[in-house]
Image (tube, rainbow, N blue to C red; front, top):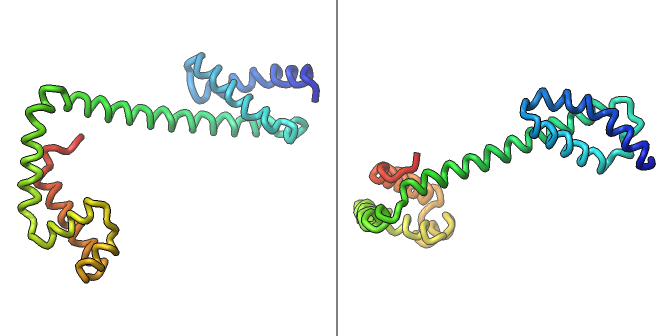
Length: 166
């Protein structure tokens, strides 16, 4: 297919694509972005569908997938941004200097409240050892190690719940 025929096809389908895009968003800029991204993806394999009777169905599916991917990406970006803002607001310079000592003291107190054996198991876990490695070190079943680590985490979470991010 030559360029002029392709341009005619794209212009012919553009108005229908604009209608499809209106089902996903009302923002004119987002509509144009959606149409352009759909056409870019479609042009990669247009030779297979150029004469296909259901080319508009194919383009609609591409547009829907593009929209879903953009939505998911925007949601992830927004979630990361909200988390960063939450951390930024809780981690001011004044807070860091004075609170870090209190946080470290609270963590140390919580860790000291563990039994000696659970402390050692959890310490190895924190250092990055795998469950099976810890189990062989203490000569215990792996399930017991998993249970102890789980229970220790729950206990520490309960004791340190004031530091949890919302």
